[in-house]
Length: 136
Image 1: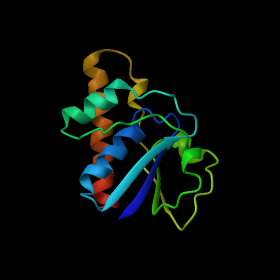
Image 2: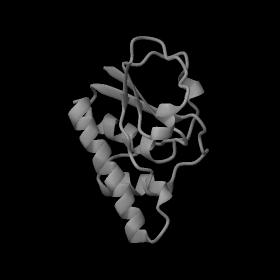
Image 3: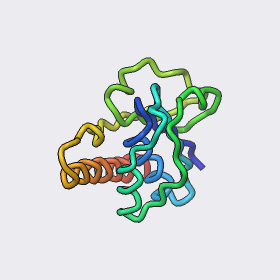
Image 4: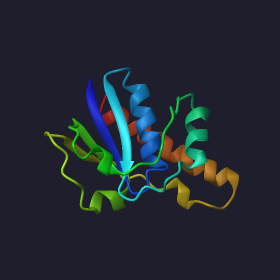
């Protein structure tokens, strides 16, 4: 089993969606967790709604700091937002392959429900494609 750490600044949207997608699409070959540099302390409700709408079990995610994983070894460390990719990442033990999947922040859309759902769906599909292309 390959261990995957997905990083985002707030750990409330994109990294949560990527974590759940990797765990589902990996069919037991991958174990993903997610974290953030500055975790918001909550999961954006649309992240959970989007996963459920696409028949992906969200599990019981929580917004957490990447400090929780500093002593763990990973096969992959994936950043899903440009800000996290440019931050000073902590040293993770092992020879993790570092990947960056630039994904627009769906939480930045705050116009109406239709556009918000479209933004979350867009992030979902983009992450799904990256996982299928680069991990599976």
